[in-house]
Image (cartoon, rainbow, N blue to C red):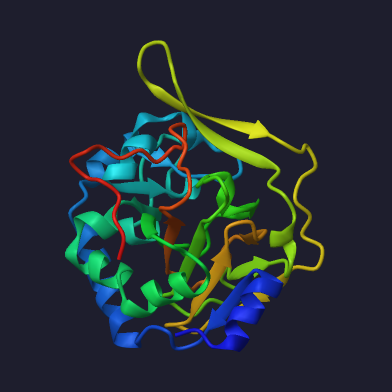
Length: 284
């Protein structure tokens, strides 16, 4: 359960850091499951794989990205391939992330994503009907782990009114050297500047479009690093400006992220995550 001090910080700063929220052994179990999932991937398919980049958002034009709302998708770092398009690193050091429906498809991720303290925390921050929207296992591999540009989660996970909350868990120690989270305390009180929408093309394929609500980019002035030991959880308000730098170190920075929305709010049909009746969104 969150303390009164935690709740005050969440309201004031837009985030709260919770050391030792997850047992180290539980983190190791998730890493072991991820290793097994990675081993299931055929490296021969990598030449046609989706590269994930928050800088150019090129993945947002690919059907694979949108399909991953209901699958376990594999997304690669730009620096994982040579000039000929061949994978030049082991899979575990080439992936940007897995996403986005592991919590509803894999028993290990299901258990990790539905810990009782997480459900309690979402109710404490004001959710009437917490719904698990997406999960991501982020690799941030040594030397090539890509930058995540300043953004707010509501841009991509929109409800009216805004309700998304991120639960970010350090699976490895996260430091300034290996690309820890950064955030601007209090930035959640400013309105969104962008909104990402799902658009259906004439041929029935899907692409993403970014609506610009305010052309001024998010500033990083006043940003603070959120260094975190393995097992630390960070709760992130959906309008908090946050980012991470590239991982130029020799150490990975694995992390798990769960995004939760309030089912009592309106979830527009042009949000990029759309589930079928066969795999509906559900709560804790």
